[in-house]
Length: 338
Ligand code: AMP
Ligand code: MG
Image (cartoon, rainbow, N blue to C red):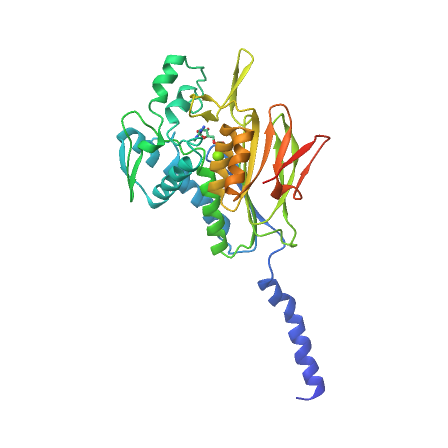
């Protein structure tokens, strides 16, 4: 090829290059969608991936909600609570099976048969009330996850027992969305499912995602920021859903041992883990356990990290977050060691 001709071919190729690269490089502008599902507002922000990734993710959340919602009479959970036996979809069977294992692993601090108690306090109906002692002891007899039977997709409950997967459903949804979006080519995303944050990869510039952790005593403000990649960060707090009567605050996280809102001394628990389901189950269970038992659980398992905020305002982080969690304001932070 003559030199001028070679130059012409090369410059034509160079001119094409930005077009070719635009097709293959990760999109630097995010695509975003916000919608209401699972009793909260969800915002999904993704970089790159197929054009229908966000709409497929939204459809998947709505499908899970329709299967798992305890208050939707058409859901599989409502049908199981009503009929006491049901043939479950693979989603519901999988979530129930893994949740029952987590109930056992947390010594029953998580108990997915808590629904009769949650309803008596009015948390699903909005008719808030403090049930009397006799009512509570009668209701507590119905709470026992070990009585749930699940063989393959066939589930059954003893008389009076009712399931509530509200403590774990968003965590499972986060895992499912992350898997779906990865399949659709997304390598970087921030999925906000209410208080459940799920990150895919790191930010497009390669740095960690910075996830703000809400201050339970001042929900307009932030307690601090945790830097993560490829992790779920899930918070359970006494500020999320509650009512007040005679100056006492009653929140939606129940102690299955007493049938009353868990008053363990903790005000919020944030768990960072690879699995959204595990982080969601643990944020609820550690809240019920209280600081000392929660730290014992961490020392035994070491497969997650946590930020524990006590009602007196003190903050404890497990060692793995010592460098990645930055507290805002002038509080003191204690670091739990193995
Ligand atoms: P979370 O916000 O993930 O901590 O979940 C709280 C929700 O889970 C409540 O609204 C109840 O529906 C349900 N729940 C409350 N206490 C428990 C418990 N100890 N075990 C299982 N589910 C619970
Ligand atoms: Mg939870």
